[in-house]
Image 1: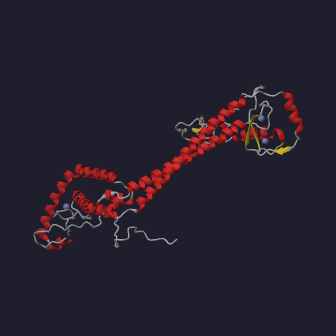
Image 2: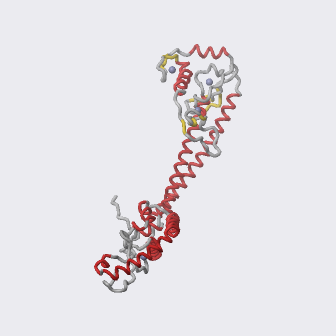
Image 3: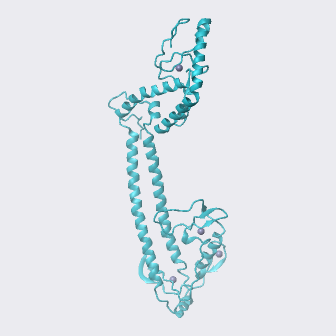
Length: 370
Ligand SMILES: [Zn+2]
Ligand SMILES: [Zn+2]
Ligand SMILES: [Zn+2]
Ligand SMILES: [Zn+2]
């Protein structure tokens, strides 16, 4: 800025796009603190600020300008020394002195300069940006590809598990249709087994081996009932049947998040009738399915106590795991996508500049030795 002391004219100030003056731009200042502001948001903010300024300060500004020119005329007459302390407004083409503690005569001038800056610098920056390939962008694309692949894998896995789910239900149904064998056979089986004692994992009591499963299951349910696992929201998963218990507890205002088939708090085991068959598929060497079913009466079969419940829980747990993984992947994808859209935003382009000194090197990162 230049001005002739005591003279009559101030030259219109030269463009100073690099001058920092965030105190004059409330929108710029807040944007600086938040680097990932998108262009649209900033534009809105700017419009808001401008609107506010024009709305509220229109009259005030005119009064101010009048005052300033009067003051200016006054100082022109009085003291050349005092005049030297006055600074010219940085606003484009503005010849008025600044307000105290500011670089501009009015908010309007500050806004004008900011807009000028954007118009002048941004096109250059965009060109510069497009000249060199963005490594982060390429990495982002690769990451998205990987995420999509994983998503597809999980989807096929989910389908498999869903098949498994239906298979299991079919097996359970077939098991139920088996004929119950006579009581004598049952008693004969019982007599052959040695009466061993085992300690219950929940209560520590010594129980007979052949009722151990039954006892432990009940014992566990008794203790489990005393706790609640809840969340504020009910589960809503598209197309999923029977996953979480989701019973609402009005006291704690929470939905139960145990597996539905395993929740002892909200589901009572049905009374087993005398003629109900166990129907557990029998296996040879633990894993080989023989195609036969256990034909003992359900209330007497200690070996397969609650087998349907446990098998169902196993499948449901697998489904939940897969769904969790899917959700995680969606989150990851969202993160990568936001990073990609925020890259080369208005603010980032205005604030950062990459200079490529060597035309051959396009990857400008420093190499990490491996
Ligand atoms: Zn001005
Ligand atoms: Zn016990
Ligand atoms: Zn429950
Ligand atoms: Zn059985």
